Image 1 (tube, rainbow, N blue to C red):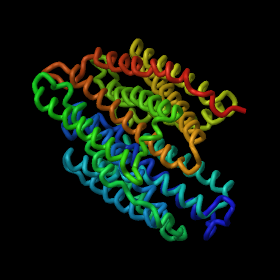
Image 2 (cartoon, one colour; image 1 turned 180 degrees about the vertical axis):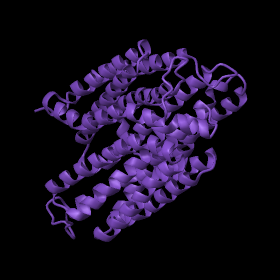
Image 3 (tube, one colour; image 1 turned 90 degrees about the horizontal axis):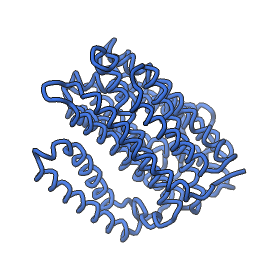
Length: 465
């Protein structure tokens, strides 16, 4: 269907509202782990490295599922794939809610990771069933509600976990996901399948990318114990190199690659990928460290905050993240994408250095986390806009999938770096990391982020009015 053709089976506000409700529910389910991570570590006897792994498992699954979900949505219909995807997400939420230990909880998070593919499928539906201008509004509403759901999850997870139990903080949003999925099934008409001649899903590429990401996570998790297990770590690095080499070779030869590596040769693409990776690594280190610092006992150097308090402390950052998208869009139109990305990098590096130097009051961490969330939103939104406008319209999906995978890898690597730093900085006989470990983490995040200015300076100015 072209942009000028009438959309099949035009939908009403109720169907869009059902998609919005689903976005709220999935956003809430996705966000409950971050503010309650210290609580989960205590109850499940997790190390900081295991906590970091728990915080990124969902993202890894999402990076693998999203390109496949998009291709299946184009081929078999967005609604059909979305309903099946949300069935997997609902199963994952129930597994997480009933999990008695860390391995079962990790399994639940792996299944929940399928939710990352829900937003692209929702966009497919509104574009097929609404005229161009109305679909833009609907996409904006659904995207905003997903962020709003994340804010609701961040705020409510702590009170629910402490007032009821950690099981209910997964169960309640899962029930909302199930209800919203039923509404979408009833209110959303079926969309016709497309691309009958598509070469299909690049399964070898998907398997090799999965192996690459999972091996990378194991390498990062074992890095603090390199002295005690050098052979294991060395073997994993060899396996990682083999997976990455094999994946690269397969993607170059695939008729319909999951990620078209040839696009990386385009300046706008490789610059956006490098900047996205670096900025998300810096952001993720801070996202992992700040709740841990809030939870450090008050008789040491922390604040002894519980899960409920941590949720409230993180809320301003969630609000800043939700506002960053519109601010970045307005800034890009007025000043160009390069100026917005540069401003975001400067803000983030300054906030990270500030947190390393001063973190003795709650408001220090709240303001620092808020600035980091704002800077991340400014940069990522501007780079996605720059990427989407620098490729042919037929390549938009491939380009944005590549940025999404790079973004997820950045978050995963950053969380594992944070966990490794705290594990290495925890004295034997105690479960409280040394304060210097947090300082080191913030400094490393700033040192990773600041050089991105050199890449940002070479960007084109981008869209500017």
